[in-house]
Length: 161
Image (cartoon, rainbow, N blue to C red; front, side):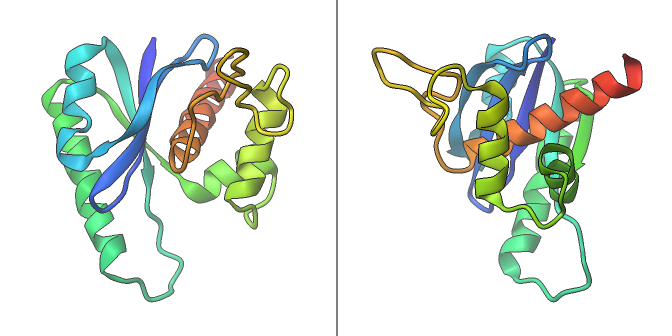
């Protein structure tokens, strides 16, 4: 099955279209929010949409957090309009699942993913154009979208496997 994992933002969002069988990416990138997820759902037989969810920890937040929340809701509605199941994964759950610590940062998450999936480029996980590795082409928030997808798939497998 294919899942669409999304790391939402205020104007654009990162996504990974992933196979649940081996957690490989079929397609990934960063697109304008108005184009996502509709264009991906039109192009691929997606079985589920998984979105990183914002959580409140009692601290004041700014306008960008609320704008991201609006887009999370819009993405969920678009997916439901396509009769697509939607799940939410919290950032804290990603940190705990991949790194074992709620204090983990983006670099820790990226290295946990590289340690787990990279084949030959054990430093960056990307490889080169002539010799690409698992994460070839990944940049910026695509790592976060992939981490959301991996966390969802692993936790689903733990429940059912």
